[in-house]
Length: 424
RNA sequence: AGAGAAGUGACAGAGUGGUCGAAUGUACCGGUCUUGAAAACCGGCGUACCGCAAGGUACCGGGGGUUCGAAUCCCUCCUUCUCUGCCA
Image (cartoon, rainbow, N blue to C red; front, side):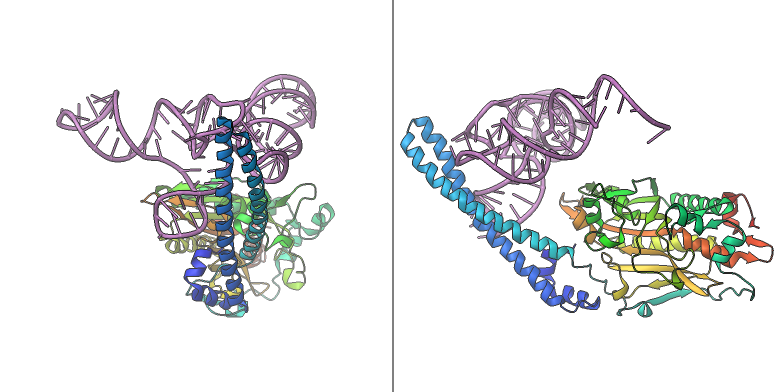
């Protein structure tokens, strides 16, 4: 979440940032925060003064008792009790103010970076790069939802039987292709210096708050009914939370992790033709890269992460484009996000396969993730992450773009992993 | 899952109602000594909030309670260890 001290120091910047996101009452929201914070300070100061008085009284009782001055001690006891009661009142008030402040802060998103394009919808996203030419398929080419039936590699109906819509069953070469992609992505990340982790895919509330899925995205996550746990919507949550409440050494930065996990999303209210087939699922696999970085270097690092994702798409020979998201399309906790989309030739559609974001200190502030600088001062770190990559839409594009009359060609880079050249 | 024990600063480990934010040791940082190092000696060494500062307040696994006063007593939750059970 945003830092109150920074809001106070740069109110104009924060107001403008929130307005850019389309939050019209930005100034009012920030004024509330600032005024609550000043209430918090004055209330705490008052309470501290009373507590100091009460503490002194309690100490003097001890001294008086030792000297055998019982009556005097009794008198101080009464005074002390009164002080205590007033302290309690103030304490309750202070707790309320703090909770209110915290709540309001939780509901304010990160502000967009200076160079984030203005705009409210995906129409306003800035296209930074597109491949020169899009693949042309013959008229009888099939969309992936037909291809998977033709070659019997993914079965949606079976998934419906086992679980429900949006939980496909991968079979035979479909399952192998998926596994090949996962291994390929993990190996590529490892080569780029990312440390592999296998985190839990069930998280507690504190982790959800740490990376900002809670309270903002509560409805997007599957919650376990007999405990306060959630299925992860992305590996970002457990991996970044590895460093919650941590003070890391400056010399250990950047910390780079890669993890492969299934991801679960309720996707409430989204269905129809545009979510057909593999385009949008309730459960899907994803390889995620996460970095914890020094504030001075996080933008440089963001670029290297973008380059890494780009290299994956090139090796898979997929036509792609790179977008810089506009302010209105930005995720809640992000200050800048680049999206990669691959072209799905049979659907004639761009499909988002990766989001690479810098959260600056927004998540770190929630996570209490800090490093010690050269003066031994604790500073909030920056956090970043990116999909590298999300599997189903890559799969969809590979199937559609690779189809030929006698089967689906597997890209060269993947063949050592699949150990077959063609799905036929 | 059941029974028992325990959770104190980076670590080890004292502290069972009143100058305890917390002894002591180790580690760490600075200094003296030394050609250099080690040893020895001296000093420093938790976090957060308020305050220009002096200083104040809170924190001994989390939360709540008793008391004028809680690391210390009570309740509750969590975690760890040992034993038993179960299981991949």
